[in-house]
Picture 1 (cartoon, rainbow, N blue to C red):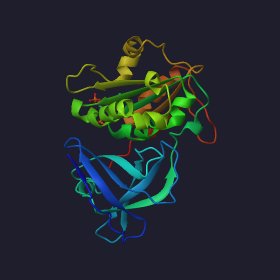
Picture 2 (spheres, rainbow, N blue to C red):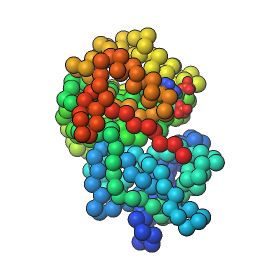
Picture 3 (cartoon, rainbow, N blue to C red):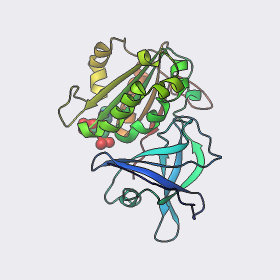
Length: 271
Ligand code: A2P
């Protein structure tokens, strides 16, 4: 269910932005949109600190990947709801018209600048780790830089895939978006969703499906190589560590803003 605000109020807190829409996807996941500070420039894949004022009068802030593309006039975030989490136990109740704190200093490693040129890019996400890719998948540079763009998303249950599935469907169907992203992206974009705890067309952890070759057979692509493939990873800690090992095994080296290479990793931020 999405709620939108009829009118945007003038913010009253320092660094505050006004919530314009909230969508609850499951009892564990929601996304929301806020006004964008006029001066905020960011690279797709980066994160900012956002939060609410704590009871002690101090800001309670967490890192959140920006899920919206850099050309969007608002900012979008995708969040887990942790019932006893200091921030998300409260953040999950925000409504259009409410204010949140947003420190306008974007940073992060999941940026195109941290990768060397390649032919195919893999975006590996679990859970809310999809957020930075929601931005990168709507960035024209993604399709300018690569011949093939593969996004994998592993979640426990089917409902947790909906945010990503709808976003990708929207990218494919929206002619305005297609115009913004650039011609030919349709053929380049491949989506590979999997679930681990509920039946779906493709079951299993992406790491296991790579290890036994299923992913490569399904997509008709060879296993990753440093020559062709680049990767960005965003998920829970255990997943990040496991796939990092696998990527190193394929011969890929970790990159950074200061030293571009073959893959980059960021933790999906949890409360
Ligand atoms: P599983 O259900 O087998 O634990 P979470 O919601 O806990 O962050 O998990 C999101 C998804 O990431 C789940 O489908 C989970 O699978 C999967 N996952 C967790 N750890 C790993 C890992 N080490 N490698 C691959 N996938 C993982």
